[in-house]
Length: 366
Ligand code: IPM
Ligand code: MG
Picture 1 (cartoon, rainbow, N blue to C red):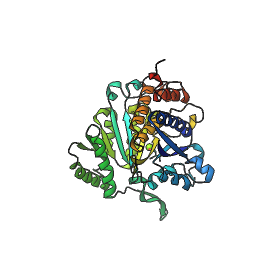
Picture 2: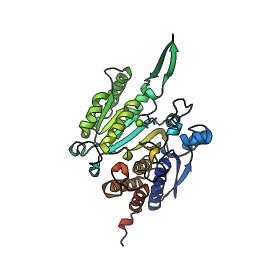
Picture 3: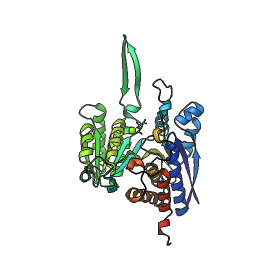
Picture 4: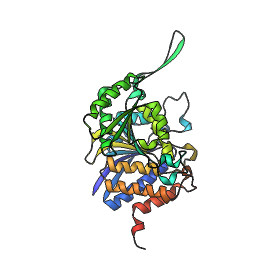
């Protein structure tokens, strides 16, 4: 029996609740499709700050390095949010991304017709939207140095740096072209080339790589107009590739197309190739939702969809991934709904619905 090694980091707030559901879904798929999962559970974020004084303890990072994939819930909460805090839960995310070299963040966005009422966009605007945001995750403004604040001649100043090397741009853009080849063959590279030097190199590199992918049509677009077009004409996009901060902003904006931030899944891929795929970290795009934590109200769909990405991209379990994706689609179409989707069902009702679908109980004659 194949045994997959997954480091699991439930984290803070609703993290443990949604991770528990995703684990049960993966186990159920394993029983059906013939694999086992060895879960190595570790602390991260605020929970780790409380336990050992740091958001990303060394044993957590080691467990991630030793695994085929990482499944993460969410980090953060008001109790760790003091402006003067020395360490923050979010530092764990940046630490993991950088230490594990997770340079490519994939955020798929699909408009399910059943969620027309949950989206602020008119049904005819969002109908058929199906796009993939490929966000560079280990460079740009998040990691560029110098960064910080100082005082010169009595005047306070701050600096952040938007830094990219050519190889960093090449690897993310190359991956985006490959992903576009497997989808509808259209790539939009988003930048601010009318102002930023980094964007001008980004465009140059993208044009060069484009020559190696003749089946993909490439368009360059500015980030400000993309922010507008994403909501006015979401169906014109297939794959979008962009710099770290632009991708952070555009991917939250794109959640409005899906209908709820509670639905968006993400994969952060590294450079390491495993026996079954590519090493990566998988997490819902939403945060730790401290306001509803521990009350059984959290929407687990984004985490289950993230686990499906993990099965597909890191663990080589495409059938199991399909089973989870189908279960999530059916839950959205006619299953129980949590409050973020306009329903009043709890996490457990959604979990039972998903498990019945994944175990294919509906197909068993009564
Ligand atoms: C995200 C989040 C993080 C980011 C924060 C929590 C550091 O917004 O994953 O999109 O900015 O990357
Ligand atoms: Mg974000």
